[in-house]
Image (tube, rainbow, N blue to C red; front, side, top):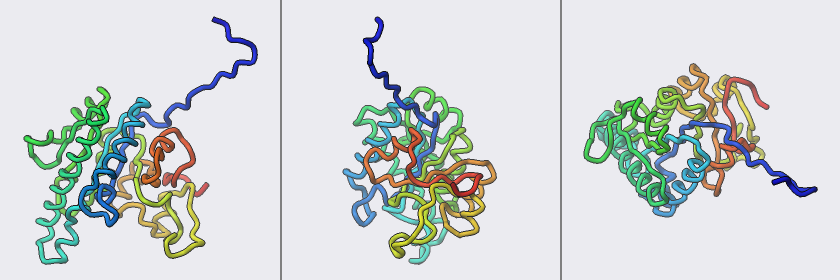
Length: 253
């Protein structure tokens, strides 16, 4: 049917990415102090992830465990470091299951894959199986870290993103990007819209730990740091809006 004269045709924005990895800290699942598991926080996460999946984007999630147990802090209290790290990996599984439950309650099919064998609650991490889940429209949550002590979940995110062919790592934080100094302490802190890997290293901005950051830099994996606490921000990032800070090969822009 022909359009009436003067009809305005609007074109919906298309997602900028077709497959992404979302890195969540354990504290983001916690209460106001970043501890335990907050039902409201987990529902908020599930809602934002579901919005992006509904755009046809394939989503992988790596979640930390700091709201329950952090290996490094455990070692400071006398727990052997490797043992503490394994305890932290188990904490990430608890968080992964909580997020899976919230996602499936909003109609988002989800699979949890663990780097540590625990077949009664999660699949083992198998790269090809993870990719197949994504192709079928399922969200995949990676728990258990890398399965090895002395590696952070930032490193897990960098490793898994490269393994499953993600186009970008979206690092969810409570600040709206990367600043040249701590914005909580310096009201004049400057936020970068874009910064190169090299400049981020030179400025010691600690976007991720050094192992994770090196993996991203060596494999040209872009990182976007953004504020996940604001409603619909994940969707805005995926649609290419100017949200957060892009860390990539080129310099500031």
